[in-house]
Length: 205
Image (cartoon, rainbow, N blue to C red; front, top):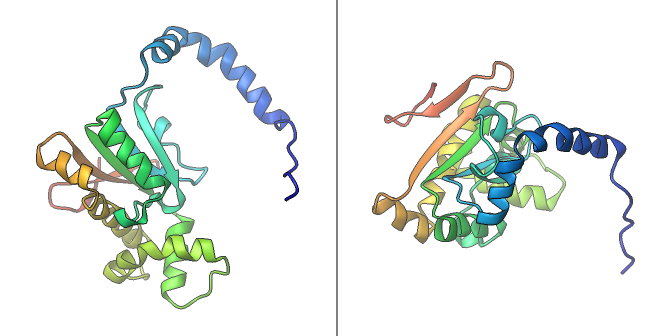
């Protein structure tokens, strides 16, 4: 197999890093030193989309060490039997880090959610890996349909929360009151965060 070509970082990323190191890192130097020496103990696991427009750290005002973040297409928690990288992250967050909260964060205009709607409507997505991944969202589409992309996005978050309870470590921690599950959805244009309330509905916070 021919090795993949590897080149230097893009100049824009290098410049961004140097700017952060000169300002952001210097401002929080003591925090980073403590995190490096003591390790991490984040209280929350955040499952969010890979979408470049959504930054859970920024929208929750989190600091380094606050969030154990997992990003993937459509902020999806697949069924436990999938045993993939998401499953491993959940197992580590709950079993090793002992997080007390898991937040599944959806967002408006999600391409993964739209791809699920297209797939379930009979369209060929072309790429088998994308097809296999978003097919995990089919139960959400069956529950909400494709007419309202916001409703489908909300239902996708609910589906991931239901899937989380299929992970034995998660279910056990929830049962003993050591772990709480949360669902949220951000409207990118307005910046308004919607969270699942006690009735299971999404409402602005």
